[in-house]
Image 1 (cartoon, helix red, strand yellow):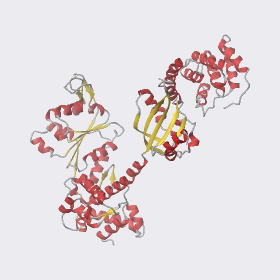
Image 2 (image 1 turned 30 degrees about the horizontal axis):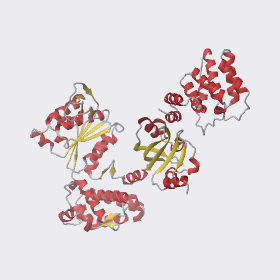
Image 3 (image 1 turned 135 degrees about the vertical axis):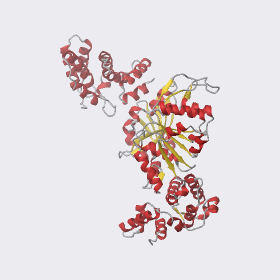
Image 4 (image 1 turned 180 degrees about the vertical axis):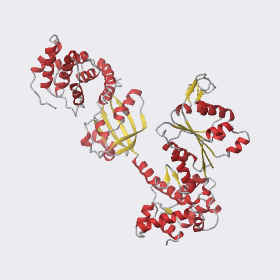
Length: 149
Length: 441
């Protein structure tokens, strides 16, 4: 079990196995933001949205540019494949908050403005979410960067 | 020379393609052979993910480095397919190793690969109109066997192949399997004559630990390995009688037990059996069970000895010449007339296998582009019957067919021998010799 094995599964889009390996690697290196950046995506794809928000908040509190400066090709970022799947999901009202949270996190890998927009929408639906509220504060103070999308 | 340059020089000196990756699977070195095999320049691929360059199905399902990471053992000679820049698939055998730091943590990997396209080229060029899944010949008896194989392709009935040693029983079994609905399922082969009885039972049905002295761990048998597919039982007539009972049960019920175990297992296996013995005689002598014979003999195939299909000898000889020429790189294209006379005259008690060996022998001894009679094995030269090649060919009805085939090709190409020879997939000299023998020149 290792970070490298996690990478092997991440690039093969086997998020469950990548998640397990990254979790173990994170025990050895708890401050590794690259691992957390990938764990956000793994957690989302495994339906562990609260876990994803925890990792998301940890990363952007430390260095949001770790996510913002992602290059879809050079970093083999799967967001371009994943975002359309989540955007096209037919969901009921109670789940809309979660979808907005998910898209808010995913869009940060490629489009800061859209990321903030989705996070703000989710906050209007659930005003008590302190992590999302703090995340918006961090992101809105950043200088705008060029979108990859 | 700094160490980086030295490393690159070492890697570039290798004949195998080789690249290394970091722990994120980004390529950080790419040798010259890899550039040639894959069609990318080094500077184009450094920093890119290996999956974007190699484009093998294994990248997603069965990453070789991933396997090494999981098993802890290096990978050798793993068959795979990678993609040339142009999109062309390249069959390769690859090795993979993980690189580790001082704390034994994986920090990257090395993948080396050998291009096997040349083997496919050989196979392709050896595949001609007279080559059916490795069966060479246009003699009526061979054409009938090929027709039968095609007719029974969708059947899962058992097959019994009978023929002298070296006549090509395994080749026919291969062709049956390759054309059957089970072609992508396991194909397990076993020679029943090479194992003592208790070992043969263990080989076929498996055993559990402690069932006999040498059974130190559980072992799966060939029938279980072949489940869903096909098993080829070569030299089936050599099987001891007590084993024949067990085999009969598998054929009738599809069930068996591993040796030393009472659990009954069920399998779905098609059986292709072969023998070089007179199996009817074996039955009369009580050495082979009649009920087993009828179970196996659902589709009987008799392969004639080579001496009964001599018209195939020129084709077979040419096939082996092409094969050895490609394997060895020697530029030998054909035999001379005298050598062919001898090959056609000889009785070939060892059949096609003996002919192949004779061509290989002559090939090794030949220095120029034509195999002369003097280079053939002494036994073939001495025991070949006298008589001319032409006479031998004339004795065979097949000659008429060949006459028509050659004439057709010549007429099509306005009697241009080079073009006709190319279409007929034979050397220009061979065509000229055949034209003389058939009265076309």
